[in-house]
Image (cartoon, rainbow, N blue to C red; front, side, top):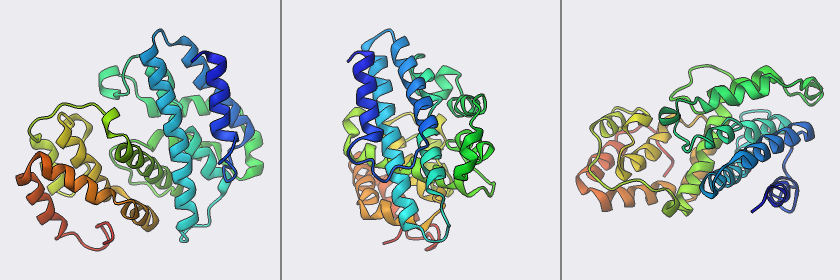
Amino acid sequence: MGVEEMLVWTRELFTGEGSEKFRIPENLLNYGFEIMTSNFNKAKDGETRKMILRKILHTKEVVMAGIEIMEKEKSVEWNPYMVGAVTFAHDFGRFPQALLGSFSDTKTGFDHASEGARLIEKKNFSELASMGIDIKVLAETVRQHSRLEYRGKEVYVKFIRDADKLGLLDFFHNDIDEFKVPWGSVTKGAIEAFLDGRLVPKEDLVNRIDVFLCWLSWQFDFNFAATRELVESRGTRDYILEEIKKMDEDVWSKVINYQTKLTPKSSWPG
């Protein structure tokens, strides 16, 4: 796929059929297209271009996940333009990172969230204020969206953390073969973090079973009941548990025993 063909494809994803509910400001949309296209153009091989295309698809998945959360979660008076902006912009930093050959912040030494926030802050988006979009808040959502934890109170930071996870879980559930990690025993840090009710840290994602434990641990970080309900309705928890059981029944037993101890507030519904 050439650059022009890629741009046509990308525009269709975000402005074509199925995008009727998207409320992404046009100037932010065009800025995102510029970031995506320029880095696609800089890519020196097909694998890097494939990484960029996959991240563009992820962006759309998160936009759609965000709309689902917005429509289902009634505890917040959402601004649909803010929802569109934060979901569309959250991974701007991933596109230059792709040129380094990995989406691992640790391996590349590249903090994609901070870079994404910088890309937002360097632009003059003052006209977005008329849509109720606060650029400082937008930049902060991008900066905080993938941190291990967030203890602040900004609702749109909490929102993008949920929308990103929901979009990722949908992708992993449907396209697990694209996510290549080695088989092997569970990492001590991964199972300890899970059984302690914590998110599994990225540095403990060594083998396939660690990754599945990480996905299951995301339940500890969901901020909205709507997110938990949407994940549950997709059968994602059962799928993760089934895969863990196939890999290690002892780990699965420990996970099941821990799940039964969770309070309704922290547990996925069901």
